[in-house]
Length: 236
Image (tube, rainbow, N blue to C red):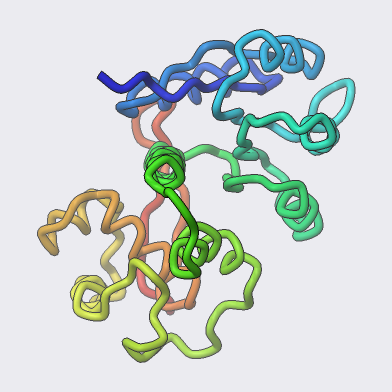
């Protein structure tokens, strides 16, 4: 049996930290080994547990998560980092990317988005462990999702099949588009997945792509306590 991927959560708000813990524990193959509410505590937990992944907030009373991230990289720490933050400034994203984050998630944290990031991280580790030597296609498969995040979005929503990003199929994309022909339709990823006969994770990937091309818009909707979700609708 494969050992779970170990995770430390660094979040100064106890309620947000607990929500993240529950979300991680609901994701198969992951285990939270520690929760830190301050930067010093985060340093200690990383030193003791040497987790494979750190979910890192940015704003703390004594400093920022980006400062801790720079420290970890300067010390050649092997822990990968997903920044989980309310910071919407582009410069914060750029700084985080230069410091080698694996992903960047905006608050409030949506379960599907965090779970998608965790599955991507798990797949990333699997690819690395299976590699014996490198060919260019292997490198492109590992680095393309990160580098593509810093590229400008396509200017036109209709993208030819040859230009679609990796993981986006034209036929499935058209199925998603057909769900939103009525501007009154307002659905989450699970509902869209049921409409097209796909998983929630697959639907979520396509929906976020259509948001990036301005074909759809998304907003956070709060259902049961602690379970915000993104709902999608066609652009007016």
